[in-house]
Amino acid sequence: MKNIAFFIVAAMIVVFSACSNAQPGQIKVEGGWIQGTVTDSMTIFKGIPFAAPPVGELRWKAPQPVQQWEGVKQTIDYAPAPMQGGNPQSGKSEDCLYLNVWTPAKSTKDKIPVLVWIYGGGFSFGSTCDPMYDGAKLASKGVVLVSIAYRVGQLGFLAHPDLTAESPDHVSGNYGLLDQIAGLKWIKQNIAQFGGDPDKVTIFGESAGGISVSMLCASPLAKGLFQGAISESGGSFGPTRPTTYPGENMKTLEQAEADGIEYAKQFGASSIAELRQMDAEKFIPAGWTMPGGWPIVDGYVIPGDQHTMYQNGNYNDIPVLIGYNSDEGASFSRERTPEQYIEGVKARYGQFADTLIAAYPAGENSVPKTARDLMRDAAFGWQTWAWARLQSEAGKSKVYYYYFDQHPDFPEGSPMYGFGSPHGQEVAYVFQHLNNADPNTSASDKEISEAMGTYWTNFAKYGTPNGEGVPEWPAFSDQNPKVMYLGPTPHIGPVPSEQSLKVLDTYFEWRRTPEGQAWAK
Image: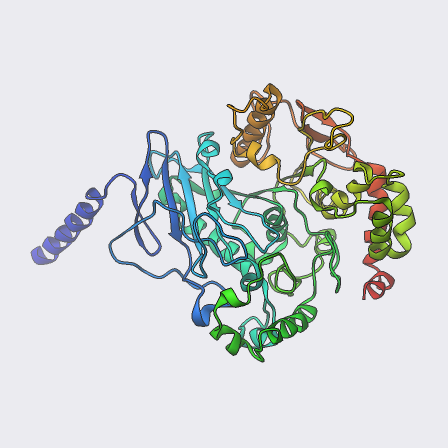
């Protein structure tokens, strides 16, 4: 008995000695020990692996468990971004499944609410290393900030019959979404080590990141991994369509597989085995492209039409904060003349074109904001409005709806006259990265940025954006359709362009009918 007691005590001494030898900023996570950067108010970890490198035979497979490492991994620099056409600051690699953590916690017992950032980039670009996404300032408002990487483009979303056949779940594509889910699972298991609360996680993202948030809210695979969601210029409530358009970006697995076959043929590959042998640089296009550049309705990660799923109550019922910017269309509209605009609307909307042109009119010699707003609403405005209405009708959790409209009043005659807030402008405001030294940064800009940072972090802490120091933000419902206008001061207003949205709604309603589905083919 004495020998047994001796060995137990000796073992405890070894364990406690190992813990006591840990340096400031060193913690143990799945995979091993990591070393971060310690500042007066924050500890920062960059480039933490959350899954095995998806390379070789793991290319186009669901993320696998993280591999163990020896010693203490230095997590002080961003890991390479996923493979893409651009050149992110941290470089790029297929070995890209890493995340970053900014934590103000002083102890693992702090249990601080967690905000998890998902970057945008049209599902073809993006990285966590963008300076705009540095989480220190937002984390200083009392949250643990995490940013997660995911595969993009063809490596993230290519579907192919060979991939479906080898999958235990009989699906392919959506690897990027599975990466996000793997990252959230890692956070659930490890964030307490950083002083975060694994039961108080809020996901947030912009553009493709905001659309990802919408999809994760509907995916049964993500159930229980987060307790709140913020979507900036996101939402995915349009039906599938073989020829895709903004707001109707989704394809079925069958359609995506057929596209995948044709895509592989471009490179002389008759099978996925051959494509796996190729250098990824050879088949990653320089620009955004389909196929393989967008999530699909695969019946597994995304079970079906999200609009229908919400109508039936088949989604993760959690509080959401959702919205979009006033002039998203300025970033996406390519039409430069009224004739081009009218031609494009007729090509996309068919029998609904004339009604929509009346609701979103062009000028005699220009394509003004009224016309650009059709692009804004098809891709973002209607998606947000539909999301808000569906959840407030079918769910128990509250919806907070915003409209970002912070911009200078451009003088008449200026090239920017009549323009509002373009796509992505709000990100700097949320992350508190306005350039205060810039003379063009106004007192109103600073007020809106401070309010947004407070609203976003309040939401992570309390499930509501409300709290001291900011105007009251009422929950949205069809009976109380109140929207928070973020600019030039935070204030409550009506649903923007509601009558035009109702016209667009009739189109999307028709598109979900058998007649509308047949027409789209």
